[in-house]
Amino acid sequence: MPKVFYTQPDGQVRVVDGAVGDSVMSTAVKNGVNGIVGQCGGTLSCATCHVYLEPGEMEYFADPSEDEDEMLDCTASDREDNSRLSCQLTLSDGVDLHVTIPDEQV
Image (cartoon, rainbow, N blue to C red):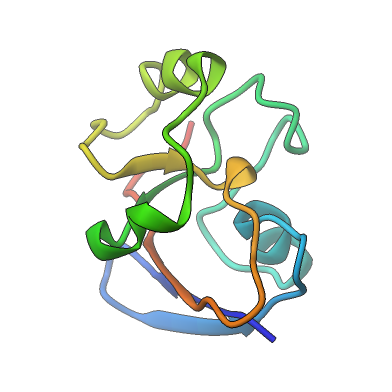
């Protein structure tokens, strides 16, 4: 079972067991993780699930799609090289992920 390590802006870390095939966003919402809004429910039409993915874990995912890339330009917090929308990060068996939640989502 994959684990997701959610680091809050204040440095607190919450570890959540996820289900293979679920997104980092849906895992956060289901488990009441603060800072992941997911306003659109994962339909890639908002940027309220913005996270900073641990740079060494970028290799687990394809580059952002054109739609995700455009939405990342609309984030409330500054976009970084490791910015991703957590609705587009699908959990895989045997892969734990570490994400940092930005200060603002909306």
